[in-house]
Image 1 (tube, rainbow, N blue to C red):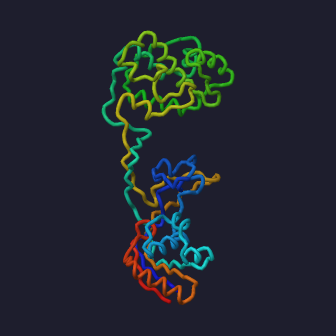
Image 2: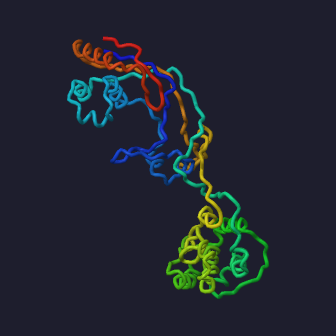
Image 3: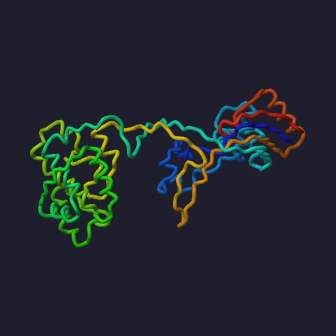
Length: 341
């Protein structure tokens, strides 16, 4: 027998991860996750096209018979002739796609995640109104040799620079990306000894950055004098350093730095379209991710290899259940056009 289904506007993709052991799935269609080489779903090749599969067809058959439980539960609990047809591989299908269109949509981010490099509101400049802290921030404008002299020998330079928190944030970002400020092997042991004494933390030899270590040290030296200042304590970490700067001098996160001085900026969503994703290096070659959002119109023909009596029984049950229209795949609208025995 054949069950012929017409469908329209069936999405050919998904924005969810594979289900875990409990059946829960995560929403992964954020720009950072979809383009991250470190994202496990991406490594597994998980954004992939979501097409009609055997499970789709099995789920439809149970739906036509009036079942409401999930497919997994039906496969576990069903003792009817349907499960025998499935186990004996008597059910197959043919998907005839009449048209496939690229779509562009705006995805609403409901996870309330925040922008990695942005903030909202006017930054609280209180810390820079205190001369000691203003001077402490000046180490960010030192040369490499001056940074080294400050870290090892407490040698400071009065630059009298005029800067605000945005200048500080941007400067920290530049310092973090400056490989010329990485610690050399010759400098490591001396600097590490100082860092261990201040923070009980080893400096990172591979990516330890002189500028990040210097600003941590510069702020930390003011702890005894300002430890009782509640307004200052609120904008510093428990270690009396700036947020977003690792104690081993390895990393800087602009969002975490700014969140103590301004509000985090919530990512409300982003457009999803074929040409939106950036080019990434895969296997040494630049390749654009092919994560298209597509919609399809077509006809699904479910073929069931069974005798006339079974086919007729199945047809009567389907008509009795009265399922007139239903979803197919992601948001596709479908209906049974014909049942042929």
